[in-house]
Length: 185
Image 1 (cartoon, rainbow, N blue to C red):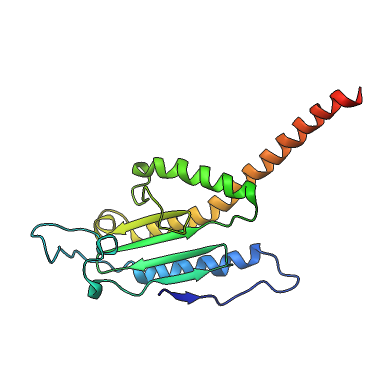
Image 2: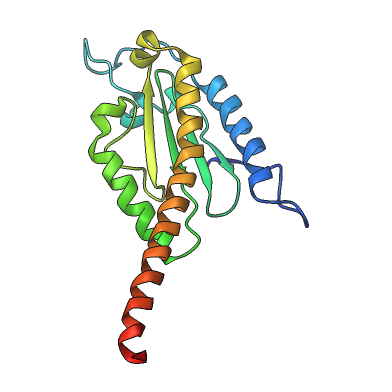
């Protein structure tokens, strides 16, 4: 059972944008603490080194998962282990259009997971998209830059989906206007 972290809410007169910064700061500090990874070979198979958070072979190698929620529909699950961390993100989907756009966009990104290096091809059940960071990634890349990438991704994906929704609505309005002109004239 993941531990829930939710220390803020939207009060009257406060915008949703002002709650994004504390949410992302919480995710950033939690990732910073969770990404203290080390090389840990398999205890069962010689000369194998698998991410323990994926394999789940030994309970003593898994740390407590942490669930950080901005709202009920926007949350981040961080599952640390001794040699890897899985970060799963549920992207805000307020209506049917956002659900379709989010599904198509995340599917598009996950098909190109090789280019993102830490992105998983399949998201964790109940989440929109997942990342897997292993000790090998931290040996090749800066920890701060990996955290910055995840945080920037979380900021940008909301902006992208909002922009796509506006474009779809604008196009639908133009199509409806052209369609209705046939009945007026």
